[in-house]
Image (cartoon, rainbow, N blue to C red; front, side):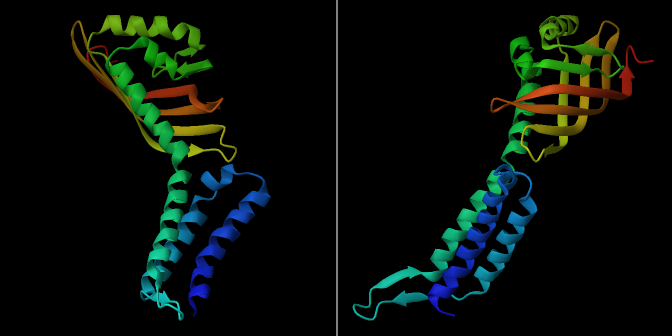
Length: 221
């Protein structure tokens, strides 16, 4: 195999995969819908690269060394790695926003807590109560924080799946709420699901469903 043929293999792989997605007309698939394909190409190329001995091509006229073939392959590997990182970006963004939301609750920052919500936000709380609209959320959180100075809610996502359009995402995970009531400590926990919407390039929580599965301490029935 000549050096040209060696480089043509990864270039053809990248060009072919990219052209397929462009012709499909949905660039979002490059980042979301076809993660498995990208990882497969990356894995196959990595194995092929590691099996190829390092070679340095020289020019016959002046014997100056050109770029090492293995170094060239490393460049391609780096490119594929960048593409793979971009695939997980939307889901990673949502996980990061959830972490920031947890932190806002921990410091009892009402304005920050509400900033993650969509205008048409609605929530079903752990006991089944349903609340509509972001407008009423600030008052509700102020009441919660006033009720218990150490109130804390932590939502931990187990999975985040982004739609093929890139406009919606489903987050599923577990939640824990703790605070000290007048009669003693209280701890509730369960599972939750959240619907995220991409609003003008920013992810906002459209709706949340919390289900209480365990309760310990004061106030549990």
